[in-house]
Image (tube, rainbow, N blue to C red; front, side):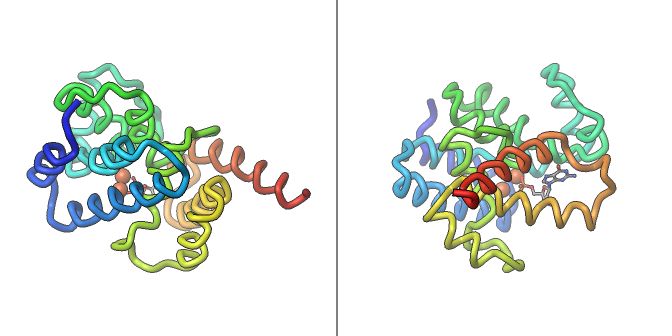
Length: 197
Ligand code: DGI
Ligand code: FE
Ligand code: FE
């Protein structure tokens, strides 16, 4: 597997200055969360560096790259091809950088929509992507940043609640990925159970 310094150089060449700043923010935030929760540190760093590697691809390129790899493309992904950028980054990680750790690849694959019952590393990347320091301030961000170092499942619930509210205002219902709904339902259950205790 490629080491993180090498991967950082490759990523630097593939994305814009602004995207690179975000990626470094995600890498460092994922590293902090790994320290807090006892996840594998190097895995968090590699996942943070790789997660948006394919974000610069155009819609057309995303679809053709997915097709070439025989990745299943849902109707929602067909209409919003950027939803594929995590899956593609995982595929590139395997092919170009010899990253074969399934937990890292899973975290990268699911970083946009999440999925029910995520691993610790998957929750860490999902959260780091949302709270990293370069993200613009949005309502609820302060509370989410604070919660990230207290209770990761509750944090994932809060992020999905915010994201679904945002998506319901900006895209039509068919544009919301099934995984986004399922992930919300899963973490909402945990949230409600904890509240009932
Ligand atoms: O790649 P980043 O910008 O760092 O972050 P990301 O991969 O989490 O992508 C964020 C965008 O993805 C944000 O505008 C919300 C959007 N998104 C998340 N879930 C869904 C979604 N967009 C659609 N259309 N459907 C979803 O289910
Ligand atoms: Fe992303
Ligand atoms: Fe990102």
